[in-house]
Amino acid sequence: MPDIIFQDGSIRQNQWIVVPRPDSGESLDIPEQQHALIPADLWVAGREHFVGREDIGVWFDSHDEPEILADHTNELPLIAVNFPKFSDGRGYSIGRLLRERFGYKNELRAIGDVLLDQLQFMKRCGFDTYELRPDKDIRKAARSLNFFTQGYQAATDTDLPLFRRRAS
Image (cartoon, rainbow, N blue to C red; front, side, top):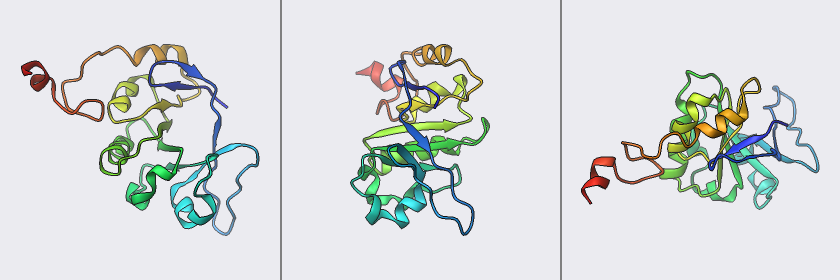
């Protein structure tokens, strides 16, 4: 498993594996003795079997709607959002919705085509951890998380835009 970057720039070993969506007619294959991220809609469908398990989290694809978790977001220790390609920005919206509308407090992870250029924006949208694309330098990316000390706009990391922070 690839290492992951935490919001503070530290690099740690990834303890979670992403379980792919099963093909039509196939059943979900969750590995034993392993922390697993399963498709969010399958967690909802089998919620009674998964609720309370600290070794099961979910992942969203960019076309999934976070509303399917509604009042159950904080029952999950980890939610991952897949960025299928660099130019697909729907994952940013999913991250903000999970944090701001649904009040998700636990770990929010970016997975998929995650590049250094995106990390600062993902951080501002509420992501805590980042699984970088395998061909990218994780150490260089980790340093990039702290390039900027202030954001102009309000986001999940600050309620007020910079001009209002300066005025107070």
